[in-house]
Image (cartoon, rainbow, N blue to C red; front, side, top):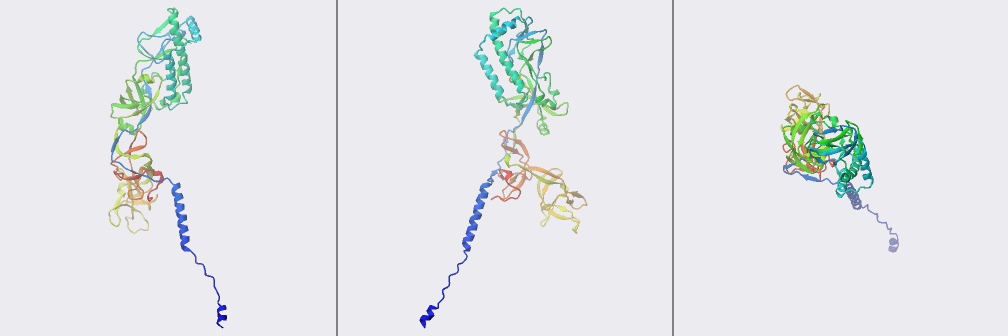
Length: 464
């Protein structure tokens, strides 16, 4: 009987339990993997610590137009003109500038000498090499417009170099006493080209004068036949020249009291002092000019040049350019901002609400980001365009509609992004940093931590 009962025992399979721990662990791994991928795809948000005030020379770079005394001489009679000096060479009173060959006999002898394959001296070859190098490296913001004039200059310079060498050889071998030689009546630098702006003064400059495409160079070469009264040569008496340039309202305020100013001639890398003045052009354009008494011979064939004003050192906080951004704020008259709230010490406005029993309206706390003599720049998440504000204690109303941008940075001292206004005074010479005012209310303080790249964050974003 006992055996029979034993045989009737039924065996059940053990029921498997759901492994919640494994599922949770898998979800955690998936989450961590997603965060790692997301973190790798995002740029790292870095910070910059604001340094104490420091002095810096800002970058104020300009492009100006050159004016100076330029005298154009004309041929007294017709004939073939052969130059006896190189372009850019300085001559004294009584020096032979060119000869006029009415019969053409001398020009024939010159052509024969030239076509015989006259060899250039080492000095002549060096001058040509220097010319080509300067055309290739000289900074110029209008490389395309003057391509043809540069081509003419190169062609004329090469031709004149050969002809000058041939003429020097011919003068030692032939009797050329019958030639009509023309001498200079004053000392100066000799040029064989025009651009139509000879005689221009600083006071004649207008906005359109700076359109470089309007300047057309004409280059004259030796051996050309000229009629009486045509161009012979141009003479620039000395190194003095004036640079006239357009200025902004900020520039006018900064420099209007200066009589002299230091500038850096960028192409030469030298700093020079010159007399300075500001004025309005004939068309009302705000202009300034600086007159320099040296280095003019380096720009004999130039009408425009780039330079920097270098004597305007400023003091302020130095912050990266990338940390600065712009944000719009409501602009509200100062009289509509007051203190209230639970503590009575919170800045805010009274917003008109039709269903609100209190005539003063509903108090809304605001954040103030900047101020002027008449206005505050404010922000509040509960305010919107079209709201009416009520002046405390009066019936005056103000329609909330005007917004304006402020430049600023994101301060992260509290672990999240708070916009702080900055007033930019200057850009450093390397263009990587701004110098900002140290006295801006609601602005920065020494050792504040700010976001290095403002484009990566938003207001109130938490920074881990």
